[in-house]
Image 1 (cartoon, rainbow, N blue to C red):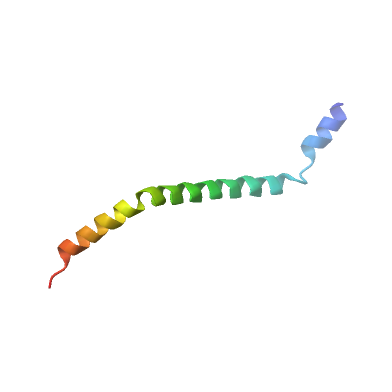
Image 2 (cartoon, one colour):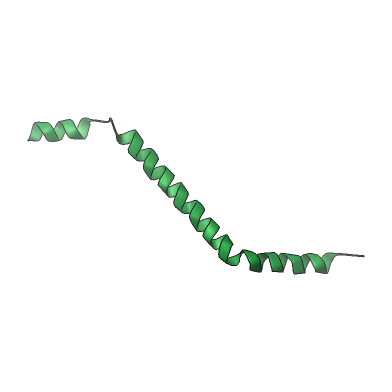
Amino acid sequence: MEKIFHRFVSDDAGHVAADWTVLLAGAVMLVSAIFGTLATSGPELADAAQDRAAEHVVL
């Protein structure tokens, strides 16, 4: 049993794929959190930006 465990621990065959999977999952979660935040507060930010731009327009 110890021999099987040692062979399992020392095998690096799937570690790179697992690392990339975790990295990409984190990136997808970060992007979805950013889009979720912008989707809910985007219209308010756009209105505020338009109001500020209208204050600075000189005709």
